[in-house]
Length: 585
Image (cartoon, rainbow, N blue to C red; front, side):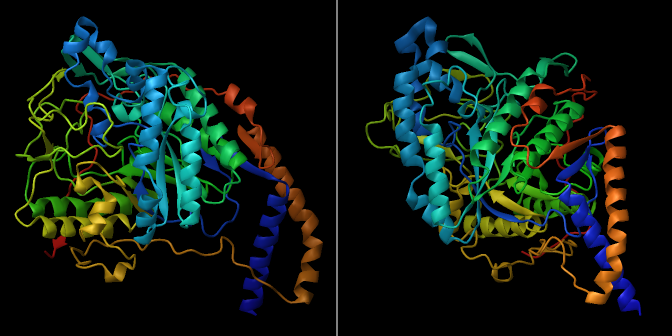
């Protein structure tokens, strides 16, 4: 009898859910940023494991320094106009060289930095996903990228095709935004203040959400750039919605900590609805804005499916310490991941590495470093020959010259006499890297996955997935039970990665029971129609999956113009707690 009752209830829920979905609508609560609960038993049933394709379509000088050596010693050539002829990011690469020369060099860079060889090596290691940083200008062109970045979409399509050949999935990551979402070179345009033709400094001001007041540390919010970004997301989804190996889209990479959280959530919400309307099978990924906490994200996208929160967890910006301390800190990160996952928030660590210092040349900006960094004595190696071939201007740097202008105000990080700074070494560097790699993998795999930054670098093996696998620091076969020393972090209480399963279990009852339910169908349909009507009256939005042109949504976005209450000193990206962790080294 109990089994009959259970089956009856199951069938009622399934039939009710099917009738609800046949209406073609998902109901969204625009006030609380929640989705209607459609009765789905398993939500956000996904897991990713991969590496980033950084430094390719969005330039970062520290990843590919051979592309930027040509701007060293510019004062001798340009004199007082030097600031107009030095490139530090994608934007100034275009303005410094001009469209034709910049595009010529970029096309050679694109074709040589990512080849089939790299994709084959990545696939052979057993990972399943490539996170591909792109610039927003590729999908809604604007100056100075028009002409300069011609051919970038063709290159993206080349990678997508290669990835499909090797059974790799793609997460498209909008890494660079108009106005800059974080003031760094990875946003497309770093915020640079020139003090003289040979001296500059980086400024912590990002204008993607409006004008930032450095005295009050708050914004006068202007949503025009964010509206532009939503059009970018719409165009990407429309262009690639039928591409089989594209599974996810990240709306914006690393919006900095002072981004007003209410406005950021509104942007994420509108992005989510756009993606679910055009490509409902895609996963929407949202960066945590360096606020990895349930207090910030709890309740956001409640009952929604196909989304994840991206946290970037690095060891490189910590104080100089011992291997035990680094490993302990890595292990403790499971506390934050576990708390978010238990709150129903899927977490993916979209960037991490094996580096434990800031020695990587230009890591904190072209020919510059953060004040007080590096905190270790760096190693130096011969600057390598350029990856794009011997014809690259200025590469490798002149071995007869020491430090060359322009000079950053933060600290020294530059080639000297043909030598380039690289990460410091532990006494037993191989053991240290295996230990840190294993600890981080054990923790990050307990959520919805992890994506290593980066697939390759010119100088830094600890930032290179391919090189780390070759050296045995990271596994080359993804059976977690076979990873050496998987008990590096003990008693962490991890959460098993979600297993792939059907979203709704199918249940079947006897024909007699089905006949008995037919009389209830009309009532259930009426109740669901009334539910949609009531939700809409209470401030909900109905979006049809069949609507492939939601242009009105992009044009009629209402952002809440509220200044953030964040203050300097509030910044606390990760707490490294010591409780509950036992290390086996």
